[in-house]
Amino acid sequence: MKLYSIENFLTDKECDKIIAHIDEYNEPSRVSNDDLIDGGLEYVYRNSTTSNLYDNIIPNLRQRIADELQIQNLKKGEGLQGQKYEPGQYFKSHTDFFEGEAYQSNCLTSGNRTHTLMIYLNEDFEGGQTYYEDTTTIKPVLGRGLFFNGVFYKHGVNKVEKNTRYVVATWYKNT
Image 1 (cartoon, rainbow, N blue to C red):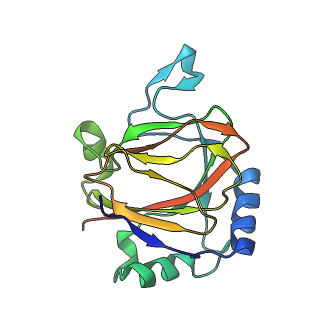
Image 2 (tube, rainbow, N blue to C red):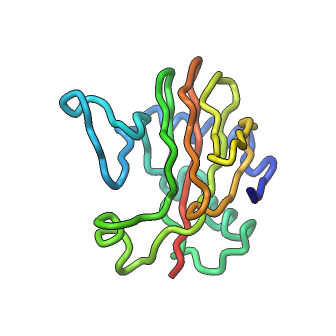
């Protein structure tokens, strides 16, 4: 598996600022094929919460990411999302690209997702590791970014056991 690791991409202060925003503005995370159980109270694939991160939270963050990853066209990137996983929350194994009906509704004009960037905002939690189906498990490190091909690598988030896991995620498309 090839992962591009970006050490110390965000400062402690930037991580704290994003976490405060996520705590204030979050809603149940969604997937393209929301498969609800228990009368819609729990998602089969994922049960975290998500917050859209606007450019004014950390000015120039999208440009810093593009510069680091040598992405010439910012329009290839989706908006940044803050994700929060509390104890008991998880995201089952998945790829980040769209297929079938989800492709029809998400990709016809903008293209499909090809790469994923995730940045850890904290490391003071138990469980909640990012895992890949090739058995690689990534230890979270505050401020570390991980960039990988989201088409070929199935990945997920183990159930958080203690405290809360926070990350920033974004996806890059092929057109």
